[in-house]
Image 1: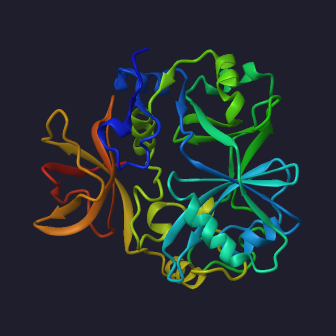
Image 2: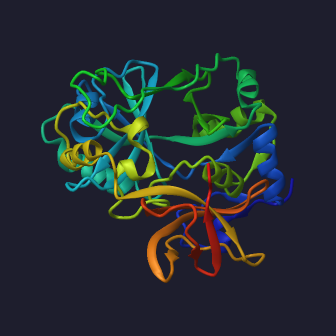
Length: 355
């Protein structure tokens, strides 16, 4: 399988440094994710446990999602926004047996805890670090593989359609706009089901002490984060903090459907979210770029400017080598840039994916 290489050996400043970038052959690992199934170590994500009778109401009042009706055994996603509606945090939530589990991007959990603690006041909620680590089983064979753990794999995510601009009141039901099925695991922890485009993903949140024992039961190869990120980029799924900047709006990176309820009560940044939605055209949009003219080891770095005729029109977030698509990148760009516009991303020429 090869010796795991960590991102940290290549870029110690990366928040992904603690986990394996690859296990010897990134493209082979990527093919496994596209055609079979493999385990990806994402244990560097921060995990919290919220308890107390007002845990759901607490986050409902602070974030973009409708949470008061989140039922036991259900998961969803929500955002913490700035007062001006810009994304600060994305939270994946899981409600199980009186605990609301929260996992977030690596390196962000301390800032999130500080914000939640500041906003708690007299709310009956406790916020504690959780001793769970996240591993993802990815690929067309993921569901069958997870069945070896002796549990029923949940149904596909239930995501509500986003209403049209200037929609009628009552168009969005009073429930989370996205619901991810959860299932407790016999040895502790739980699993949830989602997808990267057409590729199934089952996240396993496992007790750190017994995680490797559970993973061994799956009898699957390992794939590094490079392979996972390439599949994610090809699926045009943004990662907050990587494919966003300090002024990114949820609608610019296609997070409205899964993480924003457009008819819930007040929360920080709501006015901007509502205004942009009713205007119908956020100023920027997430695009998949095909890159050309790059060397063997030279992908555009995060934050590289995307230019058209010397004018900056966006920036690169995730850049990856995809086994089928070649060098690709996700970029947040001015919405009015057409697919016919000649673009550059650093030293690379770039073209917007026509799909």
